[in-house]
Length: 73
Image 1 (cartoon, one colour):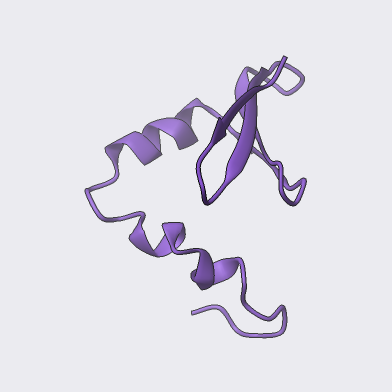
Image 2: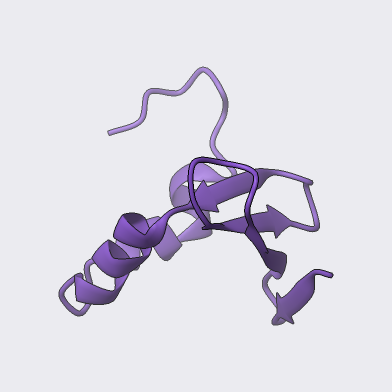
């Protein structure tokens, strides 16, 4: 069963996926249906990032609403 985390900006479903080589976190953007899998190393990396390091990634205008033909810096 999926769990859902939401705010006024996003709605994401998550669950533990056991179909790969090992357990991983399955995340789904409920607005778009886009799915991403994160393994333990990727999750630990997020935890150890210095404060503020995710700022650019968390800015939805950085990737989400750009034109598909626009170059990413």
